[in-house]
Image 1 (tube, rainbow, N blue to C red):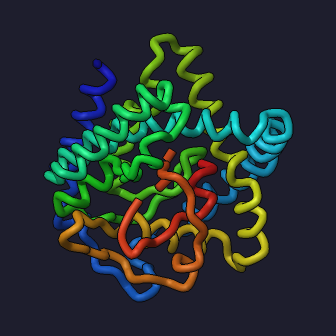
Image 2: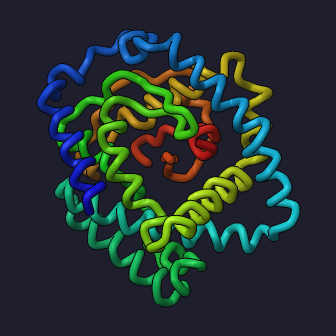
Length: 271
């Protein structure tokens, strides 16, 4: 609870210092104004790539060879069910009560008939996933994405999503466990399981992306810079060839959500 209060204090101070009007920057055709810290971001991106290449990817590869795909899918469903509960909260915060009720029903169905979410019974019943987080809620409230940021380990983000990050982390799958070691273990398992499920997508990106940094940045900003409430659509950044080609990934460290529907690169799942 103390951590949550500290996080809330940070968010409120940030709003006071920055203000929504300041964060809502105009966007150039190539997104320059949304990436003012590109030099630093590229260094962090390179660091994250090395961590993935030398640690996460080898571990995920070994994990995928040992753990059957059905088990990995069940683990992903379990973690996804916890994420759906947080999505329900955010849908209500966005004022999207019908969608919030549907998402809440999805959690209830999967938590009971799906055995704590190990099986995605709700999707078969027509209750589709609607992934949301506090960053998207801030966007629904009128806050622009802000400048693009790449965080060590956590990966791509923005000013808006960084302000929401402390709350989103509090609502991560580790929230269901009380002890520190268990929380760390669950967080690591979630990262490895997610990365294992996107090994092939990552290999495909290696072949098609000339500049991986630009590819991931444009795809992230396109996906995170839009929202929908079934009645209206707002796109805060322009589409780009890179973002249009990006493969789908689950909703995020960080992964993922939305209209027309822009897709998310595999790197977002790997963060």
